[in-house]
Amino acid sequence: MATFAALEQALEEGAWLHLQVGQAGGSPADRDPLSPAFDWPLAGGVVLASGGSQGGRSLCLQPWTHLDRSAAACGRWLEGIGLSPEGVILLNPLPLHHISGLMPWWRARLWGAQHVPLPPLLMKDPPSLLATCLDLPGWGKKPAVVSLVPTQLKRLLDHPEGMAWLQHLALVWVGGAGLPAPLAERARKLGVRLAPCYGATETAAMVVAQAPDRFLQGELGCGSPLDDVELHLDRDGVLRVRAQRLALARWRDGRLDPLVDADGWWCTGDAASLTTSGDGALSVQIQGRIDGAIHCGGETVFPEQLSQRLLQQAQEEDLPLEAVLLLPMASEEWGQRLVALVRCRDGWIESEGWASVQRSMRLLTSNWLPSEQPIAWHPCAVLEPSAIGKWERGRWQRWLGSR
Image 1 (cartoon, rainbow, N blue to C red):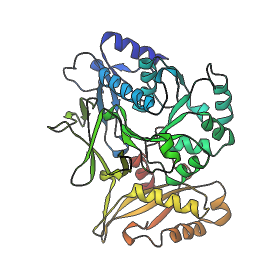
Image 2: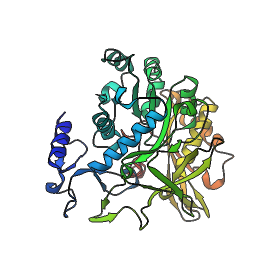
Image 3: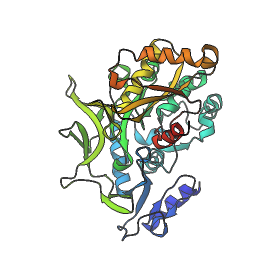
């Protein structure tokens, strides 16, 4: 509540507010020693962290007007799939210091819609979550929508009340990280109205989204650009975005860097493909971080894609593998090789033995290219992404180094 009050005050004053992890209410950016020291643009906005999973501290400057543009575009997208923005219940289980947690509140404020924060502990208790929502004013009469990260989606799908809760919803945006194909297929079979989406702090949240009907029909990827967004691929296949709501700048390593090039394009750092469907709609598929790629024996390897591939193969073989993170390790011969951190369902390692589990994992990857195959496997019972669905690779590299 302190953060909501601080946001309202900063809005009224036309000030800049720095929202940080674990700091209720945020802090005035122009007096915050952790914020950039420069002449702040007039009219105000928010300073939000971005890019933590890639290493290095980075802050984005997003004016209030850019948040308005983002919310307006999202509202038009909802209208395009038959939902009235002012008539929805916006459920919000994500942290306010992240753009994906800030924007549900901002949208509700702009649209005049109902906003309901969902505490983290409630999200981990599906029976209480379902009971709480059943008691909400308007539940069952108004369409309810929510933004989730894949980790939250999986936890809910693993529980009967979680599945029931998801099936009550008119729309479930899912983003923040790649949506594993097995998880998407589970949701599809249950009729959960997922809308895979793509966005960033730099873009003031979602710039691409898939209509839930298209998802349920089996369409892959994360949909089409919103109506205020332009996309193109550079010659390396990296996605670039142009819109009137890109962050003013990024503060990193003690300097303020412009976000866009001379023509207004922002390089996302994500490899992607753009295809046109039969009805003429542009469809986006995100393939993985270019800056997360490694070079192994002359081959370019994308660990994120391989992690999802391994999870999908494990599900097809009915192996109780719950999480995988592939990390690079220096190799004199190959340049870099992959090692795998894995979290297994409780009891598998104890009943089968780690040697047997490793054999199962190696068998799954035996037909991969040599450059793609992990050279070592490590069990990690605490392996999971952050609360916003991002892998903190630096943290897990340190964990690996301590073994």
